Image (tube, rainbow, N blue to C red):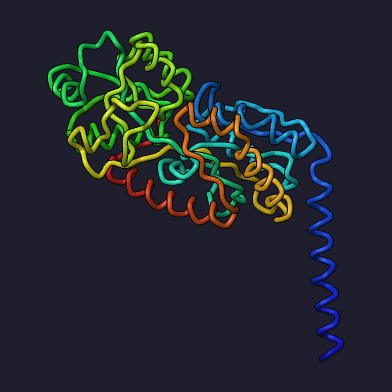
Length: 321
Protein backbone atom coordinates (compact mmCIF):
# COMPACT_ATOMS: atom_id res chain seq x y z
CA UNK A 1 0.00 0.00 0.00
CA UNK A 2 2.77 2.55 0.85
CA UNK A 3 4.30 1.88 -2.58
CA UNK A 4 0.94 2.57 -4.29
CA UNK A 5 0.57 5.81 -2.34
CA UNK A 6 4.06 6.84 -3.38
CA UNK A 7 3.23 6.22 -7.05
CA UNK A 8 0.03 8.25 -6.78
CA UNK A 9 1.87 11.11 -5.09
CA UNK A 10 4.54 11.01 -7.80
CA UNK A 11 1.89 11.04 -10.53
CA UNK A 12 0.09 14.00 -8.95
CA UNK A 13 3.35 15.91 -8.60
CA UNK A 14 4.16 15.28 -12.25
CA UNK A 15 0.67 16.42 -13.27
CA UNK A 16 1.00 19.65 -11.30
CA UNK A 17 4.46 20.28 -12.73
CA UNK A 18 3.25 19.66 -16.28
CA UNK A 19 0.25 21.95 -15.77
CA UNK A 20 2.42 24.73 -14.38
CA UNK A 21 4.96 24.38 -17.16
CA UNK A 22 2.18 24.46 -19.77
CA UNK A 23 0.77 27.68 -18.33
CA UNK A 24 4.21 29.30 -18.38
CA UNK A 25 4.89 28.19 -21.96
CA UNK A 26 1.53 29.33 -23.37
CA UNK A 27 1.18 31.35 -25.55
CA UNK A 28 4.06 30.96 -27.98
CA UNK A 29 2.21 32.46 -30.96
CA UNK A 30 -0.65 34.95 -31.58
CA UNK A 31 -3.98 34.22 -29.89
CA UNK A 32 -7.10 34.64 -32.00
CA UNK A 33 -10.17 36.23 -30.41
CA UNK A 34 -13.33 35.44 -32.37
CA UNK A 35 -16.06 38.09 -32.03
CA UNK A 36 -19.31 36.58 -33.38
CA UNK A 37 -20.87 39.98 -34.10
CA UNK A 38 -20.26 42.99 -36.34
CA UNK A 39 -17.95 45.80 -35.17
CA UNK A 40 -19.13 48.62 -32.86
CA UNK A 41 -21.25 46.50 -30.51
CA UNK A 42 -20.50 45.91 -26.81
CA UNK A 43 -18.40 42.78 -27.42
CA UNK A 44 -16.28 44.47 -30.08
CA UNK A 45 -15.85 47.58 -27.93
CA UNK A 46 -14.60 45.58 -24.95
CA UNK A 47 -12.17 43.33 -26.80
CA UNK A 48 -10.55 46.30 -28.53
CA UNK A 49 -10.24 48.19 -25.23
CA UNK A 50 -8.69 45.25 -23.42
CA UNK A 51 -6.59 43.61 -26.12
CA UNK A 52 -3.48 45.85 -25.91
CA UNK A 53 -3.12 45.24 -22.15
CA UNK A 54 -3.91 41.52 -22.37
CA UNK A 55 -1.40 41.21 -25.21
CA UNK A 56 1.21 42.95 -23.08
CA UNK A 57 0.58 40.61 -20.13
CA UNK A 58 0.64 37.44 -22.26
CA UNK A 59 3.56 38.58 -24.39
CA UNK A 60 1.80 37.73 -27.64
CA UNK A 61 -0.33 39.52 -30.22
CA UNK A 62 -4.11 39.19 -30.02
CA UNK A 63 -5.76 38.86 -33.42
CA UNK A 64 -9.39 40.05 -33.37
CA UNK A 65 -11.71 38.53 -35.98
CA UNK A 66 -15.35 39.57 -36.40
CA UNK A 67 -17.41 36.56 -37.54
CA UNK A 68 -21.09 37.65 -37.40
CA UNK A 69 -23.95 35.36 -38.27
CA UNK A 70 -26.87 33.39 -36.80
CA UNK A 71 -27.07 35.56 -33.70
CA UNK A 72 -23.52 34.70 -32.68
CA UNK A 73 -23.68 30.98 -33.48
CA UNK A 74 -21.32 31.10 -36.46
CA UNK A 75 -18.39 32.33 -34.41
CA UNK A 76 -19.29 30.18 -31.40
CA UNK A 77 -19.35 26.99 -33.46
CA UNK A 78 -16.02 27.89 -35.06
CA UNK A 79 -14.41 28.14 -31.63
CA UNK A 80 -16.15 25.00 -30.32
CA UNK A 81 -14.64 23.02 -33.20
CA UNK A 82 -11.15 24.52 -32.78
CA UNK A 83 -8.21 22.74 -31.19
CA UNK A 84 -8.31 23.06 -27.38
CA UNK A 85 -4.86 24.61 -27.24
CA UNK A 86 -5.69 28.16 -26.11
CA UNK A 87 -5.08 29.83 -29.45
CA UNK A 88 -8.71 30.24 -30.56
CA UNK A 89 -10.90 32.11 -28.07
CA UNK A 90 -14.54 33.18 -28.15
CA UNK A 91 -15.46 36.59 -26.75
CA UNK A 92 -19.21 36.87 -26.96
CA UNK A 93 -22.34 38.29 -25.39
CA UNK A 94 -25.15 36.85 -23.32
CA UNK A 95 -26.59 35.58 -26.63
CA UNK A 96 -24.29 32.63 -25.90
CA UNK A 97 -26.64 31.63 -23.05
CA UNK A 98 -29.80 32.42 -25.03
CA UNK A 99 -29.15 30.58 -28.28
CA UNK A 100 -29.16 27.08 -26.83
CA UNK A 101 -32.88 27.60 -26.14
CA UNK A 102 -33.73 29.90 -29.04
CA UNK A 103 -32.41 27.67 -31.84
CA UNK A 104 -33.54 24.12 -32.47
CA UNK A 105 -29.86 23.42 -33.04
CA UNK A 106 -27.47 26.23 -32.16
CA UNK A 107 -24.55 24.01 -33.16
CA UNK A 108 -23.14 23.89 -29.64
CA UNK A 109 -24.00 23.14 -26.03
CA UNK A 110 -22.91 25.78 -23.54
CA UNK A 111 -21.81 23.27 -20.88
CA UNK A 112 -20.43 20.56 -23.12
CA UNK A 113 -18.46 22.44 -25.77
CA UNK A 114 -16.75 25.29 -23.90
CA UNK A 115 -14.49 26.03 -20.96
CA UNK A 116 -15.72 29.30 -19.37
CA UNK A 117 -12.91 31.76 -18.70
CA UNK A 118 -14.41 35.01 -17.40
CA UNK A 119 -17.33 37.42 -17.64
CA UNK A 120 -15.67 40.79 -18.19
CA UNK A 121 -18.53 43.23 -17.83
CA UNK A 122 -22.25 43.73 -18.09
CA UNK A 123 -24.64 46.55 -18.82
CA UNK A 124 -28.41 46.98 -19.01
CA UNK A 125 -30.42 47.15 -22.21
CA UNK A 126 -32.50 50.13 -23.28
CA UNK A 127 -35.23 51.22 -25.63
CA UNK A 128 -34.28 54.24 -27.76
CA UNK A 129 -36.01 56.14 -30.55
CA UNK A 130 -34.88 58.35 -33.37
CA UNK A 131 -34.92 61.98 -32.23
CA UNK A 132 -37.43 62.82 -34.97
CA UNK A 133 -40.02 60.41 -33.55
CA UNK A 134 -42.39 62.52 -31.47
CA UNK A 135 -42.34 60.46 -28.28
CA UNK A 136 -40.51 61.32 -25.09
CA UNK A 137 -41.52 58.51 -22.74
CA UNK A 138 -42.01 54.76 -22.90
CA UNK A 139 -45.73 55.23 -22.26
CA UNK A 140 -46.00 57.56 -25.26
CA UNK A 141 -44.19 55.03 -27.45
CA UNK A 142 -46.57 52.24 -26.43
CA UNK A 143 -49.59 54.48 -27.09
CA UNK A 144 -48.21 55.25 -30.55
CA UNK A 145 -47.71 51.53 -31.21
CA UNK A 146 -51.36 50.83 -30.41
CA UNK A 147 -52.42 53.02 -33.33
CA UNK A 148 -49.50 52.61 -35.73
CA UNK A 149 -47.57 49.74 -37.26
CA UNK A 150 -44.05 50.04 -35.85
CA UNK A 151 -40.83 48.06 -36.15
CA UNK A 152 -37.73 48.14 -34.00
CA UNK A 153 -34.06 47.39 -34.66
CA UNK A 154 -32.37 44.63 -32.70
CA UNK A 155 -28.68 43.63 -32.67
CA UNK A 156 -29.71 40.15 -33.69
CA UNK A 157 -32.20 37.39 -33.04
CA UNK A 158 -31.76 36.03 -29.53
CA UNK A 159 -29.63 38.85 -28.21
CA UNK A 160 -30.76 40.02 -24.80
CA UNK A 161 -31.87 43.44 -26.17
CA UNK A 162 -34.14 41.55 -28.59
CA UNK A 163 -35.62 39.45 -25.78
CA UNK A 164 -35.96 42.44 -23.46
CA UNK A 165 -37.97 44.21 -26.16
CA UNK A 166 -40.12 41.14 -26.89
CA UNK A 167 -40.82 40.71 -23.19
CA UNK A 168 -41.85 44.37 -22.94
CA UNK A 169 -43.75 44.80 -26.19
CA UNK A 170 -45.30 41.40 -26.80
CA UNK A 171 -45.69 39.75 -23.37
CA UNK A 172 -46.29 42.71 -21.05
CA UNK A 173 -47.85 45.41 -23.26
CA UNK A 174 -49.56 42.94 -25.65
CA UNK A 175 -48.34 44.86 -28.70
CA UNK A 176 -47.16 43.61 -32.06
CA UNK A 177 -44.04 45.64 -32.81
CA UNK A 178 -41.98 43.86 -35.45
CA UNK A 179 -38.31 43.16 -34.75
CA UNK A 180 -35.83 43.81 -37.54
CA UNK A 181 -32.66 41.88 -36.79
CA UNK A 182 -29.23 43.13 -37.76
CA UNK A 183 -25.84 41.43 -37.58
CA UNK A 184 -24.75 43.25 -34.47
CA UNK A 185 -25.37 46.43 -32.52
CA UNK A 186 -23.39 48.66 -34.86
CA UNK A 187 -25.63 48.16 -37.92
CA UNK A 188 -28.78 48.25 -35.74
CA UNK A 189 -27.81 51.57 -34.16
CA UNK A 190 -26.88 53.04 -37.54
CA UNK A 191 -30.28 52.06 -38.94
CA UNK A 192 -32.12 53.66 -36.01
CA UNK A 193 -30.07 56.86 -36.29
CA UNK A 194 -31.19 56.92 -39.93
CA UNK A 195 -34.82 56.45 -38.88
CA UNK A 196 -35.37 53.09 -40.51
CA UNK A 197 -36.68 51.72 -38.23
CA UNK A 198 -37.36 54.66 -35.91
CA UNK A 199 -36.73 52.77 -32.67
CA UNK A 200 -34.48 50.05 -31.36
CA UNK A 201 -33.49 47.86 -28.43
CA UNK A 202 -29.80 47.83 -27.56
CA UNK A 203 -27.25 47.35 -24.85
CA UNK A 204 -26.24 50.84 -23.77
CA UNK A 205 -22.71 51.14 -25.17
CA UNK A 206 -23.64 51.00 -28.87
CA UNK A 207 -26.17 53.87 -29.00
CA UNK A 208 -24.64 55.89 -26.13
CA UNK A 209 -22.66 58.38 -28.31
CA UNK A 210 -25.78 59.04 -30.41
CA UNK A 211 -27.91 59.54 -27.30
CA UNK A 212 -25.34 62.02 -26.00
CA UNK A 213 -25.33 63.86 -29.35
CA UNK A 214 -29.15 64.03 -29.48
CA UNK A 215 -29.62 61.82 -32.54
CA UNK A 216 -31.34 59.17 -30.43
CA UNK A 217 -33.55 59.51 -27.37
CA UNK A 218 -33.37 56.84 -24.65
CA UNK A 219 -36.74 56.06 -23.06
CA UNK A 220 -35.94 53.46 -20.37
CA UNK A 221 -33.17 51.15 -19.15
CA UNK A 222 -33.49 47.58 -17.89
CA UNK A 223 -31.35 47.97 -14.75
CA UNK A 224 -32.36 48.03 -11.09
CA UNK A 225 -31.09 51.61 -10.77
CA UNK A 226 -30.55 54.49 -13.17
CA UNK A 227 -27.32 54.39 -15.12
CA UNK A 228 -24.78 57.11 -14.20
CA UNK A 229 -24.00 57.72 -17.88
CA UNK A 230 -27.72 58.44 -18.50
CA UNK A 231 -28.99 59.88 -15.21
CA UNK A 232 -32.17 61.35 -16.73
CA UNK A 233 -33.35 58.06 -18.24
CA UNK A 234 -35.77 56.11 -16.02
CA UNK A 235 -35.60 52.39 -15.33
CA UNK A 236 -38.36 50.14 -16.67
CA UNK A 237 -39.73 49.96 -13.14
CA UNK A 238 -39.88 53.75 -12.92
CA UNK A 239 -41.58 53.81 -16.32
CA UNK A 240 -44.32 51.51 -15.02
CA UNK A 241 -42.91 48.06 -15.80
CA UNK A 242 -41.49 46.52 -12.61
CA UNK A 243 -39.70 43.19 -12.60
CA UNK A 244 -37.83 43.74 -15.88
CA UNK A 245 -34.18 43.66 -14.96
CA UNK A 246 -32.02 42.40 -17.83
CA UNK A 247 -28.36 42.72 -18.69
CA UNK A 248 -26.14 42.15 -21.67
CA UNK A 249 -22.82 40.68 -20.58
CA UNK A 250 -19.55 40.02 -22.35
CA UNK A 251 -17.73 36.79 -21.61
CA UNK A 252 -14.72 34.79 -22.77
CA UNK A 253 -14.71 31.06 -23.54
CA UNK A 254 -12.19 28.50 -24.76
CA UNK A 255 -12.98 25.15 -26.42
CA UNK A 256 -13.82 22.31 -24.04
CA UNK A 257 -10.76 20.28 -23.22
CA UNK A 258 -8.43 23.28 -23.04
CA UNK A 259 -5.93 22.55 -20.24
CA UNK A 260 -7.05 24.21 -16.97
CA UNK A 261 -3.67 25.90 -16.65
CA UNK A 262 -4.27 27.81 -19.90
CA UNK A 263 -7.83 28.71 -18.86
CA UNK A 264 -6.47 30.04 -15.58
CA UNK A 265 -3.65 32.00 -17.22
CA UNK A 266 -6.04 33.73 -19.62
CA UNK A 267 -8.44 34.43 -16.76
CA UNK A 268 -5.65 36.04 -14.73
CA UNK A 269 -4.43 38.12 -17.69
CA UNK A 270 -7.91 39.52 -18.33
CA UNK A 271 -8.56 40.13 -14.62
CA UNK A 272 -5.27 42.03 -14.40
CA UNK A 273 -6.03 44.11 -17.49
CA UNK A 274 -9.41 45.09 -16.02
CA UNK A 275 -7.61 46.69 -13.07
CA UNK A 276 -5.73 49.12 -15.32
CA UNK A 277 -6.99 52.59 -14.37
CA UNK A 278 -7.27 53.86 -17.96
CA UNK A 279 -9.16 50.75 -19.08
CA UNK A 280 -11.54 50.91 -16.11
CA UNK A 281 -12.27 54.55 -16.88
CA UNK A 282 -12.96 53.80 -20.54
CA UNK A 283 -15.22 50.84 -19.74
CA UNK A 284 -17.18 52.89 -17.24
CA UNK A 285 -17.54 55.70 -19.80
CA UNK A 286 -19.38 53.19 -22.00
CA UNK A 287 -21.66 52.30 -19.05
CA UNK A 288 -20.10 48.89 -18.43
CA UNK A 289 -20.05 47.41 -14.92
CA UNK A 290 -16.92 45.31 -14.41
CA UNK A 291 -17.50 41.71 -13.29
CA UNK A 292 -14.36 39.53 -13.36
CA UNK A 293 -13.86 36.55 -11.04
CA UNK A 294 -12.67 32.98 -11.45
CA UNK A 295 -13.44 30.41 -14.17
CA UNK A 296 -15.53 28.51 -11.60
CA UNK A 297 -17.63 31.60 -10.79
CA UNK A 298 -18.03 32.21 -14.52
CA UNK A 299 -19.26 28.68 -15.13
CA UNK A 300 -21.91 28.98 -12.42
CA UNK A 301 -23.07 32.39 -13.65
CA UNK A 302 -23.41 31.11 -17.22
CA UNK A 303 -25.47 28.12 -16.04
CA UNK A 304 -27.80 30.55 -14.24
CA UNK A 305 -28.11 32.70 -17.35
CA UNK A 306 -28.92 29.68 -19.55
CA UNK A 307 -31.83 28.84 -17.23
CA UNK A 308 -33.05 32.45 -17.01
CA UNK A 309 -33.07 33.14 -20.74
CA UNK A 310 -34.54 29.74 -21.56
CA UNK A 311 -37.58 30.80 -19.52
CA UNK A 312 -37.78 34.17 -21.34
CA UNK A 313 -37.55 32.44 -24.73
CA UNK A 314 -40.46 30.17 -23.80
CA UNK A 315 -42.61 33.02 -22.46
CA UNK A 316 -42.01 35.36 -25.42
CA UNK A 317 -42.29 32.66 -28.05
CA UNK A 318 -39.15 34.10 -29.67
CA UNK A 319 -37.86 32.04 -32.56
CA UNK A 320 -34.71 32.07 -34.61
CA UNK A 321 -35.11 33.42 -38.15
